[in-house]
Image (tube, rainbow, N blue to C red; front, top):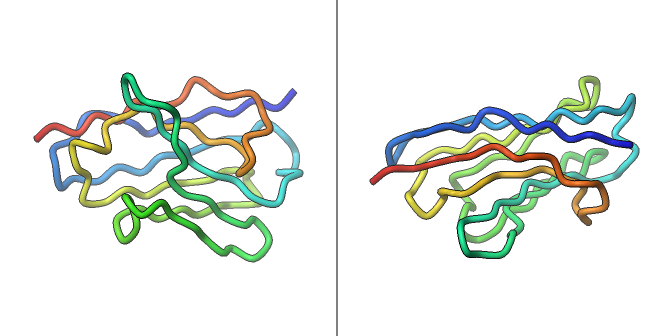
Length: 115
């Protein structure tokens, strides 16, 4: 059973930055791509960013392109999301998973951006 543990969220003012981490409890990623997702109150969970763990190619939702950066440390089974120039509409619980959402979801980490 793979466990996903997200951390790094918090309360930040608009324009601020946060760096999220996702620790995967497995010796190897055993997947080719990981992603970050978010869910705001009353909304469905949405894709935010993805990374191919072999090539390092990255993909972003239009709403975060140019502001967020996804990266990974394969040796530590960790995926990161650097979030800059945060906006109130980025407020949500952030989750990581495989890009195809195949693992059980973790508890996520709350990001709150005040205006």
